[in-house]
Length: 137
Image (tube, rainbow, N blue to C red; front, side):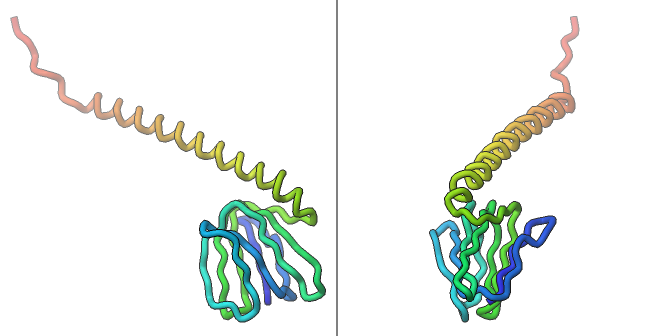
């Protein structure tokens, strides 16, 4: 099988001698072997593992992504951020922790930006609202 992993700026991995792949989506961990049915799924922050035909293990931490299987032999993963590694423990502990921290930072920043937008909208509405009836003496 062929495995292609890409991030927005580069091809992270491209191997044509893959015999199996293990990945993780919201429903849990799953495996892919040759002649797998076509599949499209959203990956979680996780480590994708694969075995080459000669028995070597490969692994890559992904920060979410989309995995597709086409024709039973083409596996493509498009991810926002990927980190190849030889040490599975290091990828699971250090890289995944960094990916999760980055995700939490983005959530916090998105919340702050939403609050600013809401405050701006309230100010615009207040400025456009007609003044109350004028009192005459």
